[in-house]
Image (cartoon, rainbow, N blue to C red; front, side, top):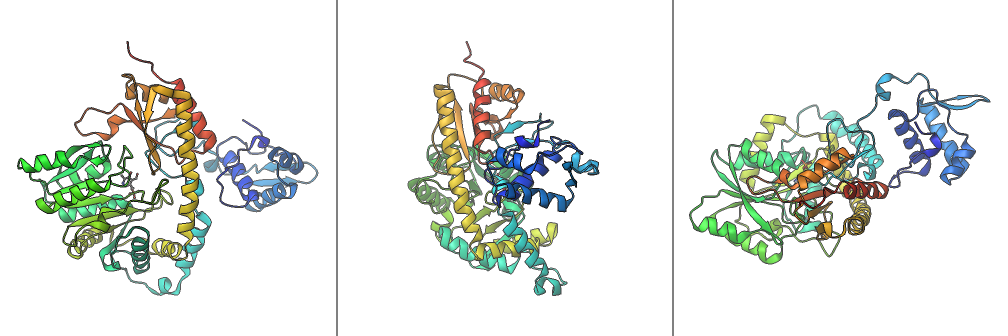
Amino acid sequence: MRTAEELELDPGHPGPVFQAIADAIVRDITRGRLAPGARLPGTRRLARALSVHRNTVDAAYQELLTQGWLEAHPSRGTFVAGDLPEAVLLPQPEVEGGAVVEGPAPGALAFSDGAPDPRLMPDRALARAFRRALCAPGFRAGSDYGDARGSAGLRAALSAHLAVSRGVVADPGRILVTRGSQMALFLAARAALAPGDLVAVEEPGYPLAWEAFRAAGAVVRGFPIDAGGLDAAALAQALDTGLRVRAVYVTPHHQYPTTVTMGAARRLQLLELAQRHGLMIIEDDYDHDYRFEGRPVLPLAARAPLDQPLVYVGSLSKLLAPGIRVGYAVAPPALLGRMATVRAAIDRQGDAPLENALAELIRDGELGRHARKARRVYRARRDLLLAGLAAELGARVAVDAPAGGLALWVRAQGGVSAEDWAARAQAAGLSLLPGARFVLEAPAPEAFRLGYAALDEAQIARAVARLAASWPGAPC
Ligand SMILES: Cc1ncc(COP(=O)(O)O)c(C=O)c1O
């Protein structure tokens, strides 16, 4: 167990410094690093150790005394409260970086599949907006159920936001708010696909989308991707030889998992193909906000001909946290109506106060400010990871810096097995997602998707060191 002087403050903490100190102490208590009854250092000592003003430490202690985490004994000092309930003291599974693995060792690190850092979430602004939404007279008075498409306020806010930020013009009646984009994919599949329908997907690709399509009885067929995203020529060839495909699912902004951006020519090719063969396009724009180089590329939904059946799916998971379950779909009116009917059958409606709170954050610019800040932080983390990989792994890996997104696609070189590497890394306390996780039938790419955004700078350095230390070596 370490002492309170070794507190690790969260460098990305969005609140005042005293709050960051208070949060760090609570984290150490709940993780068992500071035991009930443990004595905290005097405010002067801790202030010196943290290079902050003594009043700041004092404010943190006062906050925790008020909340009951600490107790003060006159003339003896400040202590962790002795009567904290067992439940808060149970060792918490501690995986830094967001991916869930079973039985992680303390201090384990994980490269996720692209989760954001929940420490950056504008939690106070969201909590305040949520409180206002709960107390709003409209919500209090409305004893009835609402619209299965989601709160009118959020659909209106999204309608304006999508038009301004990415050229997707959709009136609120064509927007369905869902619990995360996963639900949007599921509803689109149930509403648009019949059992046995074939859906063309990217391979490597996003397995949870495949599951949504399969849940509707559809069959998924993988098509290769290259540096320009889905290989439209390969799809065209299959269609020309008579393959009947009902829909095509794509992640054009940053292909999942390889991070490549579908270029303009490929987009036009895909749209033309969809028109010619009557394909529905399902466009998953899951991380539109994170473009570091140049301007975000406009979605297919902003360019598609008006008569092109297209479902555009977005998410707030990457902007806030995956646990805040809000996503959305934009679809033609008839299809959207069917999706809303399926939604009502399984979930009736969304979470009105949460949706209204998010609408407020979009309208008043809070979410936009957060996106700008998060972009700066993640871009720096991406650069740090790229530099770390180059310095520690050199030619053992190949990686193309992605123009955006919250992950890198890192290819193992020299015939090294990504699965072996992942197994060794796991033993060294680093969880990795090797290429085998992202394929249907194609050979597993010897590569990893390294979602880095949830790791801060120190964690990235530790993760890269573990990655290098667990390199399995070239096969003989
Ligand atoms: C390709 C892709 N689509 C969508 C999502 C978002 O899912 P949700 O909005 O359900 O959290 C993710 C999140 O990891 C993703 O990687």
